[in-house]
Image (tube, rainbow, N blue to C red):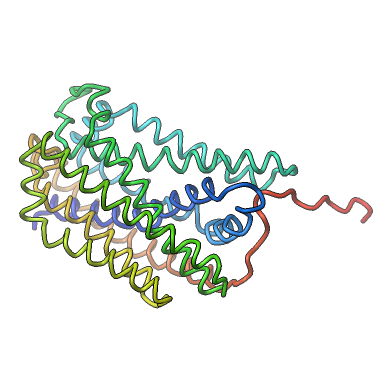
Length: 347
């Protein structure tokens, strides 16, 4: 494998890590939004808030890693993507800002109404960002991003059936992963009602994701036949592994088997991401720019690869420690939609 190919492989690994953590984080925001009114949604929101609060910022470190790696190693592709797809990328960024600001403000809001409004903004941002990031990926896969500065159409490059369905698929994938993680969290905290609650939602999202994935594949066949043929030929083993793993996840959750549940679900999502990467290789932009043609200087790639490996060796254990420490608490935490207690001013 060439140095450029190795950097591209690291990029795919970073995308996978972001799907496992950041995408699931957005899914938690979707479930928070759909939990219902203040009374019926209180306990699901409590579990979501308790599970996500300690790790939500760390979950998105991989997005920064992906942007910097693409910008430095594959500048031509980065410039083409950023200038043609600037509208969905800006909307995805808006979701990040809404989500981060509302999450922080909800913790400091003194009144229940303001905390509830912040919760709505949190949920809205949790839908915007994965949808538009998925639309960006759909535009690339459909071959609607030509090489050059703003060379593609600023609307049809991302507002087309493949992009829209890929955006919906990204939202459904995050919601599925989040629901599976929350099933395990509810089981660990001995909350059988919430375990059933999120298991039902995991099943629904698995069915929705499968249906949307099939629809996206059909749309891709009409939009970019060459890419579709690659997906159903060279990537078919990974697609089958992904579907089997997702089915195994449902079986384990149904039988209340928590050990390995999150690993199997994450493996299924990884297989689907890698099926895309294998189908598109060796192209950065199908089928106009290869990894070799779009790569930076050899010396830059070598040092980038060294630092990328060092970063992975430093960040992965740190995140593993964070997730391990987060697993030590068993209380359900505070209600995220109610006011904080008034401070005792008599002291």
